[in-house]
Image (cartoon, rainbow, N blue to C red; front, side, top):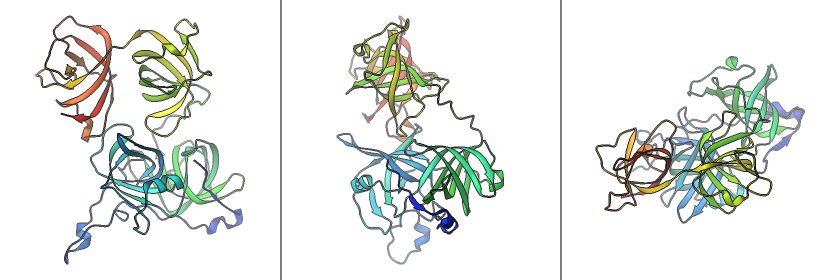
Length: 406
């Protein structure tokens, strides 16, 4: 994403116009009224996120956007993936209809309002109701407060949208909103050096040393541990669930040094591929169902699933069997167990019972609570160890929930 800063001289910094404090009720989509009814009583407060579109998909499966920024209310999402359909209103700040593609092409900041029925995935997924293209821009830094002085707070970290390293001195607007990870409001005096923050600033930035700007919205993680050591590789230990166009999709467990449970990795001639003994392997071994440990940079794209380059891949000797089917009605079903009609047919000869544990990675499609109810179609990868019972029982390692249900 190209930087959108407007440069001001340092001497004019204090004259910069502050962005208005965001309020979810104040920016909700205009209500539809009829007759002489009380308009205010008809306003419905809906969740919203203010930020930029960091991923845009428009294919045969539908139109989706990922919005990264901050919630308009204390409990709203800082990042969310939204389905856009013919019922979604796409307008500018004056209420005029605009094309979503033009917002993407011009890299415009937006406010996105969506249905309260969102999934519990990371990021959450939901249905976009209204998308408003803003007439102003801003930037954001994800980092650590290194110093607090009368001049402001000095934050060191990475640009939330470009991943560039940056240091910036931020002056707090008198009406600045400061909230913690639980949505509680904090006072300026509660900010301390060492705190991990996401701060939204601009649009104007004075190109002094360090650069300076005004912030009116700060998210503070008071429980955060130290930032990951960028010299240590992140990684995922898991199962390859897809191989397409030189990329592999890996779902599993993040390493202690950092990483994510769901990642798309580019594999090229720079990727080191070895077996558990360190012997070199070719890319041909990277097939669906293969267990691997993938190492990659701590810096990844801020979309879901994350995308980055694979630096090293260690291939395991064992594979994960795959099944496709439907969650069936059964007295065996519970939070810890699912009866799967493999093949979604009338035969029970190849059915399987999956044990669900805290280590089972469930990648959910769009739907309230992503419930694994009877009729839900899934793809699952499981342990090669199975009981000899009928149906056999095994441990589910990855479950991918599909949107189409019977």
